[in-house]
Image (cartoon, rainbow, N blue to C red; front, side, top):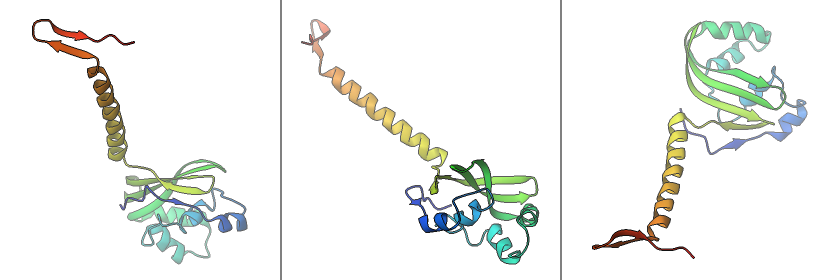
Length: 152
C-alpha cells in the first residue's frame, strides 16, 4: 500500500451537490479521492451493478476475494472510517490501510510502525534535551567526585 499520509483530500463541490456525506454515499465520495484503488472489488462491482441496489452489491462483495474498501465505523455525519482490506474468504479479511473522513476531509491513518517510531523519536529528543540541561550543572573534580553547581 502506498503511503499517502501527507495528503488531505476534499471535494467541496461534490459535497454541496450531494447534500453532504451519508452512509449510503460515503464510498462513492471516497472513490473520487487519490486513496481509491480502481482495481478494487468495489470498483469492479460498481461497473457490473450500476443499476442494482447497494445491498445486492455489498452481498456480492463478500463473496469475492481481493482488495476491497469497507466502512468499518461511522459517526454520521462528521466521521467515517474506511478500511482497505484484502478479502480471503467471506469471513476472513486482512487490513491493509485505514482512512478516515472528518467533515468531508479524507486522510490516511499512519501505520503502527510510523506512529510508534515517531513517538519514540520525540520522547528520545526530549530525554536528550533534559540530559544536556542537567549536565550544565554537574561538576566533576578528581579528588571530590561529582557535585552540583548552584542554580541562581
